[in-house]
Length: 121
View (cartoon, rainbow, N blue to C red):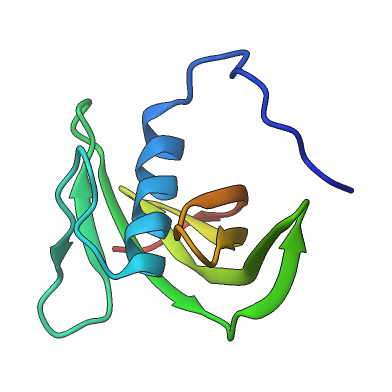
C-alpha cells in the first residue's frame, strides 16, 4: 500500500509529538527540534519533559535499513523499536520509517505505542 500525504485531521498530542521527534532525531543522529532530550547518566535512556510536566524516557534501537522505493523515489525502510516510559507508565514502541535516500526526508512514518502498564520506579 502506498501512502499519500493528507493534512492532519487532528492536533497530535504532546506525547505523540515528543516520541515522533525523538525517533526522527535518533534515526538521523541530530538534536531534536522543539524539545531537549537529556542523557540519563549510566543508561541508554534519553529523557524529556513535556509542557504539562510529565517526564518521558526513551530507549531506542534501529534495525538495518533496507533499500526500497516510495513511488519513484529511492528510499530506505528503517525499523525503530524500543521502550518509552511516561512517569510511571510503560510502553513498547515500534516505528516503520521510509527515508528518501537523496534528501534524507522522512516520506512515511508509522509509529505505534503499545501500553505495557504501570511500572515500578
